[in-house]
Picture (cartoon, rainbow, N blue to C red):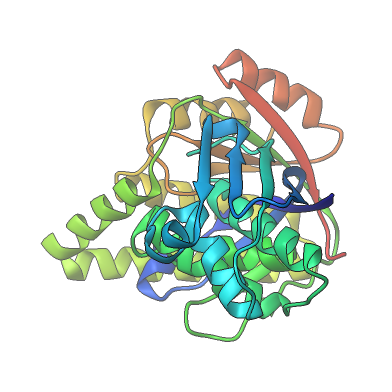
Length: 312
């Protein structure tokens, strides 16, 4: 039996604007992971079992060739990249990452599948190649994804990302602590991206001005991270949330958690990901973490995850 894992991710700043070719900052959430296990057998069928989705797919050569289901597509793309035929076995996917919450569950599942098949067959793919394969399935989940989820998750490093540009790893001057709070409201990235697209098409000049403002905040935040200025990073996060509200992708639940975090002493707080539900993030000192987490739970968060972001 072979096992492989992949982490979650969260966007620090720049979501939505990144779709319009502006930069974004994103970090891995290594404490939340997908695990894929694979065991070969003598049957001609690969059984895909997604525990958290309550889904089982029996993959035959015919289904492998024609299916547009994301789990089958990533198996097909992986085998094609490796130059290998379909083999019989049982591949089980188990995830600790909440679905439809902006934490990259789809990209993490795909990454874990690529890794477990590659390792099981005793072959290798570069991280960049894995990243490219996972992006193909991201289009099935999200329509026109930015590519940031698959990039952060495949490399499991904090990144400065701009679509079409070479990947830049972030230099972290001082590790910093984030709390990730789940509203409990499922959110579709495809829907929120589509809504922002409608706003952009209705008033391109205003939309572009807002995207430029987000890009400027991303640059400020990058400087703050690389120089260890936590307060400046927090301020940039607060301002980014205000712009996301103008893009109409926040929600009462997100705004309530953001307000609760700030009132409890967080250095900054904002929604993270597509919005319209899902998660928000709060920048805190290690000493503040427990009290801010308690305030978030009191304000309605169904779960609060603490993670430390470092350059390692």
